[in-house]
Image 1 (cartoon, rainbow, N blue to C red):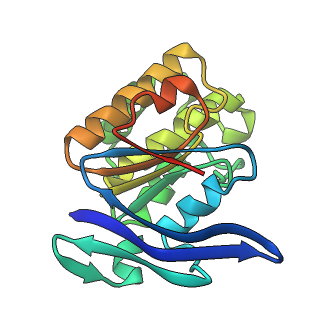
Image 2 (image 1 turned 90 degrees about the horizontal axis):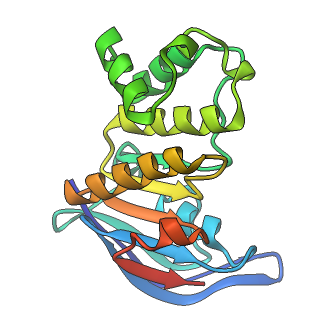
Length: 206
């Protein structure tokens, strides 16, 4: 179980644009840390740094399993992401997408597992074998969250997770996030949505 992610004197720039300067912070398991800030402030970049998808120009980002610092490869296998940049395969069905992404993490889904995931995100069972290319944006967002739930990761990196969802969909996501934190998962969520932000335990304003 990942217990914390630490930023130690992290600075990062794109070209001549400095995004972060000398940031030190600890993200802890069992907590929902919410990142807020204006568009372009670096919320998505912070998530990428936390997941070690990119490395900082200066300083270090480390992940700890209990008190042991773990390497990047091991850490990446413990992360699940929902973000606008996360793409599903439009030519595949919803079930095929779920099975494909979960198999990448050595999770083999049964028909019963898939039915439970569809119920958790409130996706219509009639859509299971339809191509994702025919889905609405809200349905795609629900399926992205089903993919995240199928992986059973220690760390959730969420970038505007309620985008394109109606009120019922937002409530499902918020309830799942709160439940995951209560089970000890480390949640890092970038958002400017008030309903999403108010469930945070800790806040970083960029």
